Each structure stands twice: as structure tokens, then as C-alpha cells.
Image (tube, rainbow, N blue to C red; front, side, top):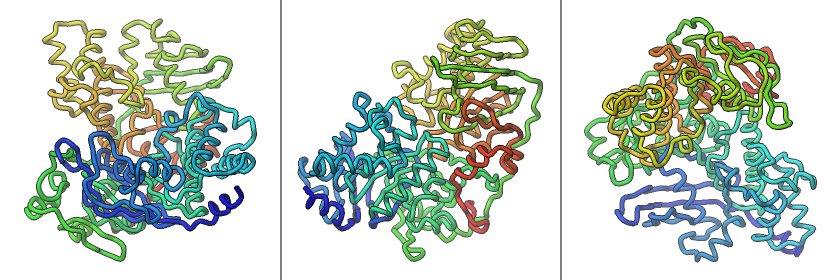
Length: 605
């Protein structure tokens, strides 16, 4: 057995290479991705970025020899450790996965087996791919946990996934990916939904493991700030093509493709130096892509040559390539500085929380919380996972009744649960959940979902409801025709707009938004934030915006409250708190927030 272990420790590091990859839909032949060329060296992290639907995950799965049902690899080579993945049999692929190429999923809560203890899952992963004795296997399992800064004692190994926090679950998933010492690892949005403190730990773990074990890593993400901190090189995808690729510093300091520049404009800036602007329109789907450059319909620099021919790959610097007819013109475009959101004067207090304590069974989760939300006010509530943010939001909405203390709306004390509150109070406080995929009934059309809200609070005839449904959709920038579509026919951003439209149909005075942008790409996130800010001004809404994204707060919030351990440790105007934080915990959050350093002369146009 020792010879196998020695071989595992000393085997040479390998790179991952993709050349001319085309994956198409089996029935129509339309390409999902095409002309993909990537190379990841040992110890290097390549960030693969782009909007949802751009083909990032499809490319990542190709490194594992996997193609989703309904698709097929039509052309190209995928090589790992000098082995052509397409030439491998099913049995050979099973031997490669985990041992040579591994995977870190986006949602460890669904990737980890809820019925098995953590220790057993790690031991089974190692036993399936590496022939070692029991003592060596136990040593490797504990070593893997220590490498991701988790306890390696027997008590932790006996835990089930549900007994871990989200950050701990993600680090266990990373340990499972690295325990067999693979040559290549694919990370698919592994920090989505994590607070900045946990995210910083996970990113540092990934970076250190890749370098110490000489692992070639493909990091798939829509979070450009995270990629800027982690990646050595970056590839930007749009509508199934790589439109720009190069060293991370060059991509972020001097982006040459208009799409890359527009993505950067949509990234919130913690210091508030850059304007945050979404990208109008949507990326074309497979089978519906235009002639010429696919980005032309959304590009301010598009000309006739862009609509006639897809640009070739052009080298603009050493290791920096771009596919754009007007890359030089894009670089020369003027920068745009942040002007700030229009000030909205806060009015009288609408919602008041005083001395709020809450429990989950025997566990005390909130301690004497004091909060005030005024008319036209947007208050951001931030903190790490488990700090009590969502518990506080649910207490306000009447979704968590195990609490003591006072919650008042317009000075009137509210019952602990929504069921005990009058219909008018339930109408005035509306909740938008984090996951639009789970919060909408898949068997109801968009129109039926919104109409149900209207039936509850504004009884009327069917013709009047249809008119009001159309008005609600128009308010969130959706076409009235969307009323006839089901949730699975919408993008993530469109689903979140529908969830907001459903809440606004009640004409509330308080809107509770619980991590409503955490799973959205930056361009859709910017559009949702713009929408909320506009609606706040138009309707006089008071918004409680729960988030772990501190940079986003600069764009949307007037005030911020910082939570940790079930207590609010600091609150005040956003600029004052972010410029001169008083609480050590606030300073820690700000220090752990990823940033993109963009030179003023090259700020995205």
C-alpha cells in the first residue's frame, strides 16, 4: 500500500486543455458553446465569467467528461494529464473523476448526502479512488479537514451535513474534492450565497490548496469581484463564445471587449467610486443567435461590420486576446464616475422594533434588537451567516413566532405571527424571498400567481384583475405577455422580478427583501437594484434589504445595520459606517469584502 501512497504524492502535476470545443443540442444542432479554447497550468486558477446562460457551467462539465441530457460534444478536444476525455469509456471516466479531475459544487447542501456522516462521506470518496490502508485513509481524511480549516476530531467526523453551517458544508465539499489529490479541479460558483467572512475563508482555502498541491483550477463564477481576488487569468464568455481572455490584472485594469466593460460597470463598488449600471436586453439563446457578433444588439459600439461577421480572435497584448472589431475604440471610451443615487428624504417612522428576542427551540438567536424603518427609507441589514438577519426579517413579517419584544407598524403593536394579524397588516408588509426558483408555484402561470395576491387583498372582477396583473408586470419592466408563461420559462432575473411584482401587487408600505440578488449575475443584480430604488421613490416604499454583499449596499441603501451573534453592533448612514466603522466586526466585514481595483483611466465606459 505504501508504494501507492508514495506514487500519489510524487506524481507530476498536469494541466487541463480545451481546444475547438463545440457542444450542441442533439435535436436542433444549435450550438450551446463553440470555438472554446482554454489552457489551465498546474497551480493556476483560471476564472471563467459571464452572465447566466453564457455556457460557463457547460464548459466546466466538459472537463469532467459530462454533457447534459439533450446535448452532445460535436467537435474539439478536452485533455487532462495528456488524456483525451472524449476517448475515455464510461468506466475510465469514473476512474478519472475524483482521482484526476474533481468538482466543487455550488450548493453543498444538496451535494452532500444528508443520511451519511461527514467522516463516512470523506472515507468513501477516498476509498473509491485511492488504494490505501485504513490507517492511511484515516490520516488523509483528517489531513483534508485540517487543510480547509475544519476540526479533524472524532466529534466533527460524526456530524451530519445538516449540523454544519453553509460555510462548513462548502469547506467539506472542498475537502472531498482535494482528498484524492486530483490534478484538475472545477469549481462551480462555490461561494454563491456565502457571507463575506466565510467566503474569504473558502477562497483562501482554495487558493492555498491549488498552489500547494499544484492543482489546475477552473473557477466558474458570475462574481467578478471574487474572481479578481482569486484568479491568475480570466476568460469572459458571452452566448457560448469566449470573447476575451488574458491575465486577471489586464482584464480588470484595461478590458478590451465592450461586454467585459459593461460587466464591470455592473459590479458594485464598496467605495462608491463607480456608477453601477446594468446591461439592457438579454443574451441570445442557442438557435436564436444573430448573424455576426452576438453582443451587437446590446453593444453601443456596434457597426455594420459587427452585424455581418463574428470577429476573429485578436491578440492585443502578451497572453491577452479579444474577439471584437472595435477593441481599440472600446479602450478609448470615456470613463464614468459614480454620481450616487438620488437622495430620497426619509419620512415618519413606519416600522419600529424594540427589545426583540427570538429563539429557535432552546437556542437563543436574537438579543434585544432595536431598529427603526422610516417612510422612503432603505435600511440594509448585513452580517455573516447565522448572525440572525433572516430571523429578524421573519419576525417582522410574522413568519417566526417564537419571539418576545415589540414590533410596531405605524405605532400599532403587531401579533407574533402573520396568521394572528389583520388582513390589512399582512398586506402592508410583504416579503421577497432569496430563491425565486423555490418561491414561485411551478404549476401556476405568472398571471395566476399575481392574480392570487390581488384576490386576497383587492377583490374584484376578473377583467379588473387582468388589467392590474398587466400593470404589476409593467411596473417591474416585464411585458404583459409574461402573464401566460410558467416560472420554468423565465430566467432567474425574470423570476425575481415576478416575485417582486407579486409583493408589490399588495401595495405594501414595507418591503422585506431577503438576499434577493445573491444568486443573480452582476448585470441582472444591477437591474433589480435599479428597479427597487425606482419603486421606492415612486411608491414611497420602506425597504428592509437583507444581504451579505456590502458593496451592493452602496448602491441601494440609505442606512445600514450590522449584525453578529444575534445583536446589532453598529448602525447609521452607509457612508459614515463604511468610511469610519466603529465596531471591530464591521471593520472585519469590510476587510473581507472582495474588491476590483480598476484604474481611473481604464474605468469601464
